[in-house]
Length: 169
Image (cartoon, rainbow, N blue to C red; front, side, top):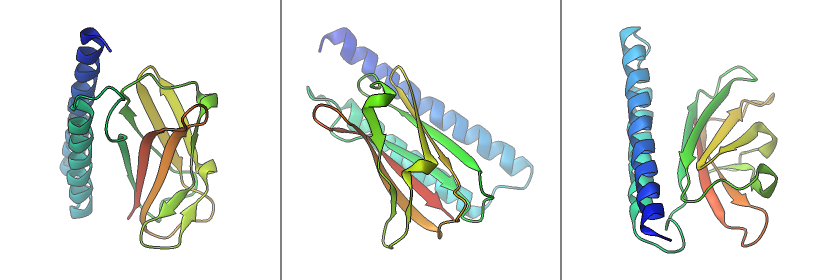
């Protein structure tokens, strides 16, 4: 990996972190002005900012095999959201996103519980170095909790590309 590629990866990761934080702050400000910003949203914003910062820091560590940690894509949605409600978030990867035919996502499994959500409710979209994940609320609403899935390649080394954390509050 040449110096230009390393510098480009660093700039992309820092820019992604800054953009996510700007978006998070703007959304919080709008919700605060309308009186719709609650303590659980503040906690979700703090956790999301922390996870994004940890991912960016890990991605900036020098490595010849890519980032030492897979980026975490954090999404939050009320457990009582109507069927079909969708939420999207993304992450910038160390390398370009492989063709969508060559990546897959696992089912979402509840941490500390026995619940799961089928992978059919997750859509993936890649654009250059950016991987976007969209979760759509299924017909049978899952129980509140934190769910985890992994996005990985389906050819070659089957390496993880990103972790998906879905918090249903």
